[in-house]
Image (cartoon, rainbow, N blue to C red):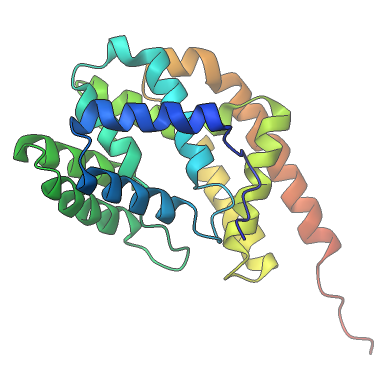
Length: 232
């Protein structure tokens, strides 16, 4: 059973996703279909409440909207497809493992080595969400990946609930709340919340509003659930 709490794709959205896959893998062979099916199986793993196919659908909506600004559309599209293919909450090398998975899969599809290398590099950038200012393609991709932080309030609530569901499969709830608070504060302390002016202008104000909302919510949860001192 899939635990998707964020966005369940429609049949049309899934068909569009597949058409984009074929556009940038440039083949429709049996091997291609097998690689794509295996990719979707990974994104449909039951522990993924947010980092699932719904997340991919949303990312490719941004991709389609801003694709005219992207020079190397193939590498960016492939990096989006594979950036979370390996996603295990307790591991710290998901990005590296996702890059390795992509390299192997794309080699099977005879994608050129330069594109494979660039795709792997882009995937690994999602670990820090940092890129050179001159690398507009990477900057757009990284901003797309965190755009949910600047989503409208109700959509953000679904996002934050889904992230909590993912992490609390392995972490005690209190530990998650404290870690999430540290993460949200680290986002606020960044010099640039979004790298590109495009995403900054659209999402940054709402992002700060969302983070303040969730920080207050988590602090209240920690206060309510704080263990009582033993009676003396």
